View 1: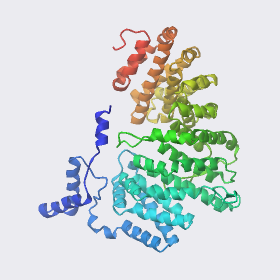
View 2: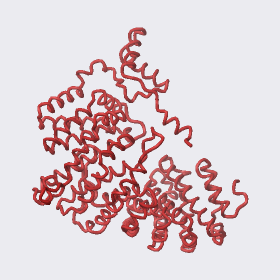
View 3: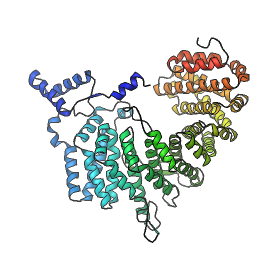
Length: 571
């Protein structure tokens, strides 16, 4: 069953054509004698009052003279360059498009739920002028002519443009953009010559290539894969097309190739792995809220059948053990602009791999495969590293993997026996101390969202590991872990009360729900531990959570109180 809110999303918003909008503007000018800007503003207000989505509409006052718009001229220049196979001009023009898209999306509001008007207008114009088709044509030409610079420039332009408009992603799909990217990515895979010797001309890491050429191939791989990710995020049909074009399989092959690379240029290899994680994470994420269903779970199963879990764990092992001894302090990754930006060394890659492994491990079989490949000790090792360095983002990522794996009954014991409860306890202690200090100091504006995120994952891990497992539930109480859980929940409740940050409030709410479920799991399976929980203040805490978060925590709070043996659990 879907909620009324979900059904409303699936129904979609009302849409109109550019022609309908322009007619309304002309009517305002002719019949009401409005100035152009006033006529446009009036039309916008009228359509918005009717619930019409204008994200695909050009609403600038200069809309009637778009033939002279810089974007129009740039696209005409690109079209001419592609027609004449002028790669130099194509590359410069594609870079101009990329930079223009970055400029449009660089306002602070772009990162919020509603895009800025500047961003929306640029996306609408780019879509209206069919920008993606011109870029796809340039990409195809670069691929057929083996011109890596043109391919990188085209992929960078797509990476910057596609997030600006959902309509642009639809047009990209119709223009066979996914197939064009798949064709380009295919050239990155080494082929086998008739004599059985591997042809390394297009291999990502080839010993015979000069170092600069090798690095350029790595940058091409990263650019293409980030374009794939940009085209599939929140676009279900594009995800389906990407899987049908074997981009999932190709991405896994490149992952194996990159992780086992003997390249001396770790920075470029790392950029590729981060881009790979973006693709795999997008393909297995049901993030398109406009549709009632998604193939994300089926995509995860298909990728798992092709060895995704083993490949991700293998890469994680390499980065956790072998590559952490590297002397390099920084790596280069490709950001939204398509440029190379300096970020922290292997840590970012490890976090990306953890996030992707958690996303791909979508069912019990995949969790078992990941655990069989050694994911549990690796994740615990990374969690301990995060604790030692107080790296909250790394700690959160490692706990997130453990939480997902512990949802499988067959893995709970492995996590427990490997010291998972102690790691969980220390994680809660560290973050709760930080939250208590910030709450006591009244420094609520600077409460670290990463600390709250760590608590959320730690409580989620405890919920999963204690579910249907009396032995671990008993150990959680006797080891003092539950004491830290209750202390963390108190700190979260205080944080939620005092913080003006909505994100922190939502994370605290989600974390408290996890904590309620963990207490219920322990109380339900271990009646002998109920008095211990009550003696430590579980009842008062649960009732307080129910009162503050009645809409999200009342059910789990009442269930926990009931399983603690209290008759008035609904009060």
